[in-house]
Image (cartoon, rainbow, N blue to C red; front, top):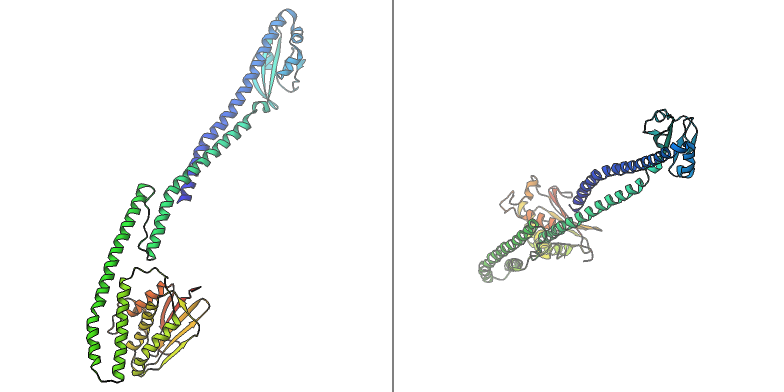
Length: 430
């Protein structure tokens, strides 16, 4: 915007300056021409009057001698006698002076400039001619310098207009840049960021409204998070009742497994409450080791998979796989992928969990030998082919996109069923 304003101002100012300078250039040239011709006419008339007065008593030749040839040369003059002889500046032989000899005064264009002709009528009736020559250089004297001065003045005016446009553009662009930076920071999750309203009244009003919008979003988000924390807290009552019921069971593998599940449910509930009450987290603020998270969550789900008669293949590289996902979100993502297999494939269906770590990205693959995906709509929020909520794969998608990764669903490479491949960029210097 700032650059366009400067270019527009320069273009308009240049056209205005040219509209004034072109006529001024012509006017300066015409004035110099008229000034030189007027001076020549004055010199010719003065010389003709002097010769006319002096020739009355002493004759033309004596009058010319009295005036002096030096004076005649000083004004680029010539005196043409009736017989054709010339005193002073030489006159080209092909120059027609017949009209002047007939008693007419005029100005004619000659080679190298212009000439002024003034007749001098003698007492005997004969006519002599006073001729004053004006060269092209004399008529254009000072024109080039005047043109240069006018051109520099025009350039200075255009430069000044560009400077003023730059100042004006900066007064508008800088507040807009501040608005953009504040909006970008708000979009990254820092709801404490505010803009200092400045600039023209319209832009200042936008800044005020942006601050009000940020305040409103903060209040709404806080209310939603408090509501989520309250709802999660309500789970503590049935969770406590379930734990009391499990405590009444006889010791054995079933009781241990139920206690493990209740501990996981308790941990998840506490995590939801903590996350709901904490300040808004900025994007890419936290990271985790995806390889370690996958191993940990596969170990958690392995007893259930074993109970369902499934073979679980786990292929995880030994290196660390740091990705820009908080540990809790990574666990929820892996849980959703594994739970999707356990819930939507028949018991006994094997599946594979694989983590491949590259130089710049990590690939997480979950493949099974089930019937596969019907179409790509299963990734949409609320879409499910079974009795589930349809939120699992949407949670995975949003988590992956938030970390700058990609999610691909399709057919399994190693099995005959569905395959989900997640590519996430590695976090450098983590």
